[in-house]
Image (cartoon, rainbow, N blue to C red):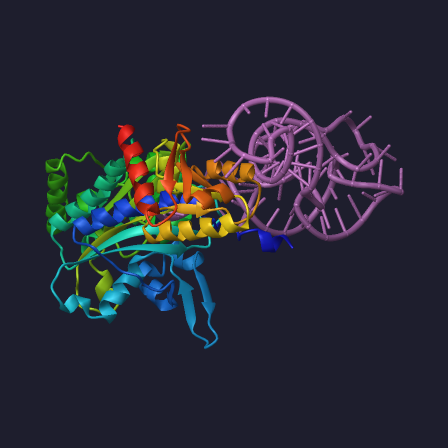
Length: 430
RNA sequence: GUGGAUGUAGCUUAGUUGGUUAAAGCGCCAGAUUGUGGCUCUGGAGACCGUGGGUUCGAGUCCCAUCUUCCACCCCA
């Protein structure tokens, strides 16, 4: 029974009050993205499983153990998207977008699905805002994307968001580095913890940020990717840093940043923030020059980031950032008696047509209850209709805050009268 | 996936060593005010005590399983 009234693990409902906050955040993201020439793209929730195996990478945790994969009735293996980039890239290829002018810029709002053990800020269904820039390998694009992320946090007014960047090189220089790193950690096997011994095989870079004390010591002395960057990668990274410096954006180079997706090359970055005593990546991304090729397209350098909506909302809430709530009712129409009920509904309809947020009682309850409800709705004005008012063709429009009442016509001049009173009183409040 | 906590009305909680109809505050509904909200007073509705088993004459209290949430790990947005 309880299955019917309990959302599945790791999922969340968003109720109107909170949805208003989401919308406010989304508005800022849309406007900032569009300011930079990014256009919205919407792709399917599920894709062929192979897309993620190829795009995200077969060896990653995401693909190996976190995907919601199933066979559809036609026997095809499909997967709920665990992230937004692979699907976006697939769509670009499918529609030949890369054959037009480059670069092309897209943003998206998507739900993502990962089979994880849920915790605060870590859900099985979560939402990302992401941007994607295809067709430029220039450091300027790296800077633009990072700056875009940075300016979002500024616009939200959140404090204490740290930017960390790193370069993980191109396949050529990274391969050389991996060899060296493996050899180094291999010669310190005795000092590594169990999970790190495992990492040694799968992804030695992960050992770099192990919290185990002994591993940390070994990691501190380990060779750094930055020292292994080839000439081009090094120049690229230096240029990106110079552009960030020029833009006055603070960052730290963290040589141990490793992303969990195989497609990254060169620049990687994370915006970190503390939420309830826990440091979480709120926004992270980087460059993935090999992705389009991996999916069967021509070599197309690209980069982007994903920003966790739930984590951002958590952060805004933790910092007490005020977001608009549900738009309150402007005027509430109450009534006494059947004739007045019909009249109230008619006037309400008229207000709706003129774009006024009005509400009319529909439960036929006592006037006192109607007024209480109006108060709860936060109505700025109320108008009560009864037999007397219908006879006179006039009713009192009450300002709920001041208690002031003004007679207005219920006839042809109703809207004019209403708007006149409302504008007058709005002016007074200044 | 591993380890550890948690779960009582919509919300926050009380519930004594297992013992008659599970309690309070807030919220909700109604009345006092027979045509006007916010304050006050009065009354009312609302809980199969997360779910399913078990022990017992008797379980919200004990045992097992399961689910949710939270914490650490893993990982990540």
